[in-house]
Image 1: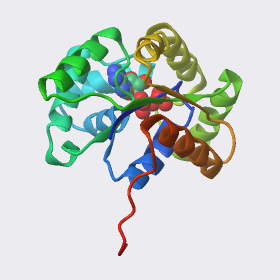
Image 2 (image 1 turned 120 degrees about the horizontal axis):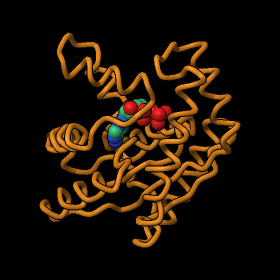
Image 3 (image 1 turned 180 degrees about the horizontal axis):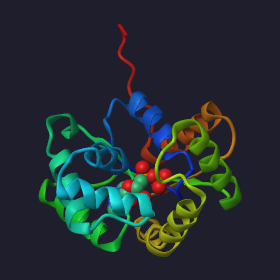
Image 4 (image 1 turned 180 degrees about the vertical axis):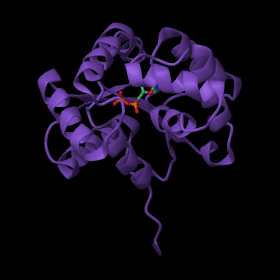
Length: 199
Ligand code: ADP
């Protein structure tokens, strides 16, 4: 299964990505997590990543595309993957398309977590209080919402036109959202994952 999960910052992509990853036995690849791990290093690239992320903007397409291509080339992605936080720009969509075409692969579905803007801002402010993520300050949250609306939300139309979208209401308890998501995904892709008889 090859999947994307999209939605505005704070919609719960990371949380739901973990559930999908477990259920379908595919790795969840989060560009946000990769960049957060990268930015702790003491290199000029790490400094650049840190500055951009902390301001709420997007890392350049060149850097992002390289990192994703490297990650998807790893052996655990051979049987499928769930990309969380990528693609976020038209150039990233093009690069992903070319990458998959080069391997004779295609996406099975694009999950969209739909959530009200006020709700997601409240969630991020709450996360800021508990997790201390550097980009969860109120001002940065606004920038991230705006950047998403300007640059990433329009990409949904591309995937809608390819009939890949699976839109799921992201509000409510985590397990309820997961159940809605699994049901919608199974309906789209033609069934639940096989369960092994001895397992
Ligand atoms: P959220 O969706 O809640 O903002 P993420 O963890 O997905 O959180 O991303 C955090 C930050 O990492 C983004 O604001 C951006 O700076 C950077 N980032 C993640 N994915 C990408 C991407 N595909 N292209 C460019 N920048 C990215």
